[in-house]
Each structure stands twice: as structure tokens, then as C-alpha cells.
Length: 128
Image 1 (cartoon, one colour):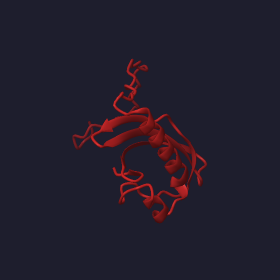
Image 2 (cartoon, one colour):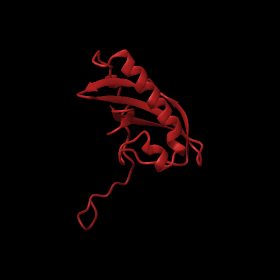
Image 3 (cartoon, helix red, strand yellow):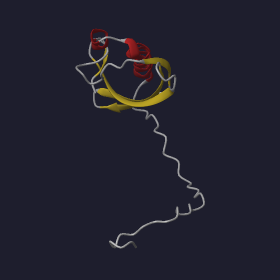
């Protein structure tokens, strides 16, 4: 304690030994509520969307996205899409997926997690 009554650390504290934690997050699983045709359609539209996403204009995104639920991104290049997980949500289908992009400036890869809501009228659109 110094003259003003404040605690002063004069030495770096010692780090505790590494602690092992036996926890792994639960991997989401698809349920049987989404039929095979819907999974195929939604997989195709998701894959096409993410390939175009980094370079798409707002007008191009409008074909796949309703409103502004997904903002345009720039400066990245699509690398690959992970295995999507589909679940039924009323008339919609929820898609959880990880997508790998390359940052064009730093050349670092980044993995972005998406949870999209798809709806089909005349074609599939991302609505949430």
C-alpha cells in the first residue's frame, strides 16, 4: 500500500497451472422435420448464395434475400461452406451453417457462423 492508501503491485502474479476443461459444445443436429427435397433445394440455394455473397450487389442479393436481412459484404473471397443443419420452423426452414472466407487484404481465413431463415414462395429466399 502506498502513501495514498492505494494497493501497488510490485511483482507480476504467478499464473496458475493450465486447467483442463472437459466441455465440448453440443453440435446441432438436423431433425427429421425437413424432407429430402427441401434439404436438397435449401442446400443448393445456400451454396449458390454464399458463393455469390462476397461480390454481389444489393440488386443481385435481392434475388436471394428479402429486405435487408443480410447485408452485402466486400473484401472477401468465398472458400467453402460447411455442412448445413436444417430444422423446420412453421412454413420456414432454419439453416445453421459455417462459411469459410478469405480476407483479401490480410489473406487470413475467417469462419462466419450463419443462422438463416428460408421461405419458399415462387423461389427460396432468405427472410431472416
